[in-house]
Image 1 (cartoon, helix red, strand yellow):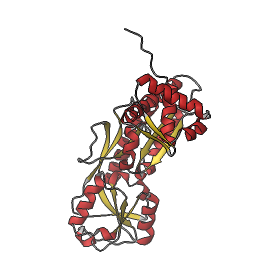
Image 2 (spheres, rainbow, N blue to C red; image 1 turned 180 degrees about the vertical axis):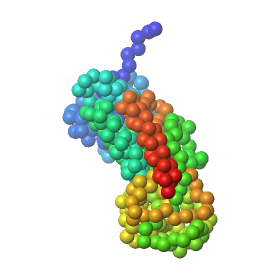
Image 3 (cartoon, helix red, strand yellow; image 1 turned 90 degrees about the horizontal axis):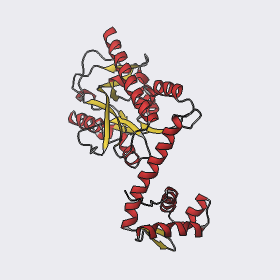
Image 4 (tube, rainbow, N blue to C red; image 1 turned 60 degrees about the vertical axis):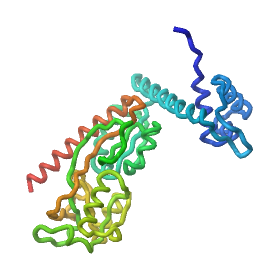
Length: 312
């Protein structure tokens, strides 16, 4: 096989930084290089491929169509290089391991503490970056490799063909209220149409189906407050007499005697939780360990919930 001289990885990093900063001068400052040095690197890359990659103007740079292709490939290459370094470090004592992943608030209240405690026992020096939001917010970062994986909820309309999906658990919804509310016997959603509700702020996953269910039972969107904060949901239910709807296996934050589950007889949707990552990147060891821990603690949490129900 003929030996092919490949572009230098560091040149690809410089190319990406120029695009990120929007100009050669700004990129030079960020990289600690001179502007002529950065200009030469870009010119060398263009000479290697024999095509213009960016248009230089006084106001900055813009990518050509060839530059857009190179950017996509170069980001994938440098991400895989970083993953390789992280994984190799995990095989040596004292090597730095890094992992980044996203999750919704309820996962942070329920599964995450056990996951992180066990993970840090295995990788005590690991550098972990945690991001809390709904899955819809994480999809771009999963696809370009900025996140190793994310935990979230799915629906049938999601386009996830380029993503690997590892199911964690399924959980039915329940309506949660303050303990101060009295409730005798089964009730319907329609009987709650004048109540104030608070739900997570997303149009994807099971909440899209949930909103449709609530509207079918004449619960107006005007009576629904949306937030990404579980603390806000907790306080609105406890102190402002709001109602919320959450998966029954995720009720740990609401498990105190200050809250009750209302006996709603209408059928509510089922939440399907999964761990998700890009098929374009090999899941590194540290991330794989966390996905396995998510599966383990999901199973434990569901068993604990079923036991509580049986005890009642």
